Image 1: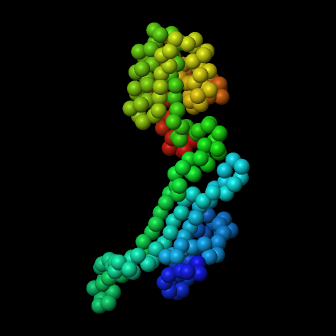
Image 2: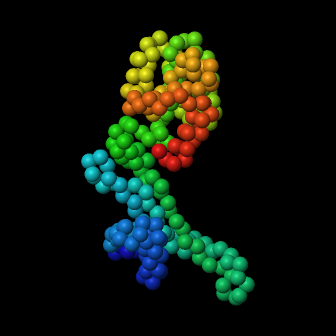
Image 3: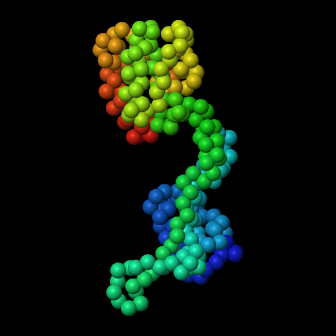
Length: 220
């Protein structure tokens, strides 16, 4: 509670106790710490702080309780209770900023991952690499299927050599390179490599899509 806080101390105490219980449930006792005097003037808050690659602390997300605006605007809601004097109650406003400053959050993530974005966050998820221009049409079909499923996918149709295409995709930090040759076209598959040049082998396109969806769901 800051020195210039608005409202009754009793209300502040109740709100701070409620936030403390919420943090105990979320982070566990001892998994968070109190910062005396750092609340907003209209109510207590939870600040989530992260460290960048240089171990500097940045505040990002914040959740703040606001008792004052509902009071000042005379806001009430119907409680559904018919007993006289209990039909209406005062709401509490919640200010929630999930990222805080978008630019700061983005900068912290850029430094943290050093350009090697995890698949679920990556702006360059898949590069499809045809071994020969003869397989360009099939590569475009695979790209369209991946794009329809919501993935970021590109096809390298340049005149560069196969090795150069793979290398370029790895330097550009595509999470996966899908190599396509005659066997893959005949089998309805792709041959998977990672940006770390690990060969994961041949996989059916539908199985690849299921695998990528699983990675995305698990935030990998």
